[in-house]
Amino acid sequence: MGKRLLVVNPLGTNLYDLQTLELLAPVVSRDTDLVVRSLGDGVPKTAYLPITSLFYNQLIQSIADAQREGFDAAAIAAEKDQAYACGKDMPALP
Image 1 (cartoon, one colour):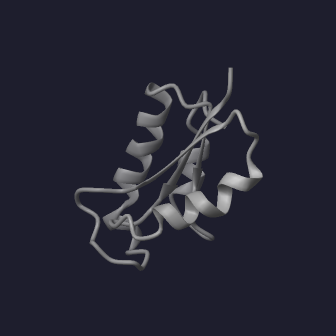
Image 2: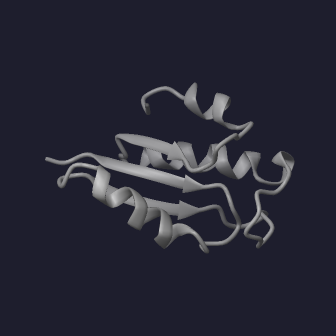
């Protein structure tokens, strides 16, 4: 059985979701179910990363949801993200 990997784009738009999926699909194993999601409600609908206070809670919630949904791992698609430290400390998901 393959692994499930969630990649979270910390934006309020799905503008980069397909592009992220196309970039990562060739580098994961064939039996990996790769899912790319953006944040939703409460995050500005912009292609730019908003200030942390506008997406922090939604980002942490998306990692918690991934754990409940049975993902084996979750990644945040951002070069520098202040919520990363908190998200990586959540148990059960690398």
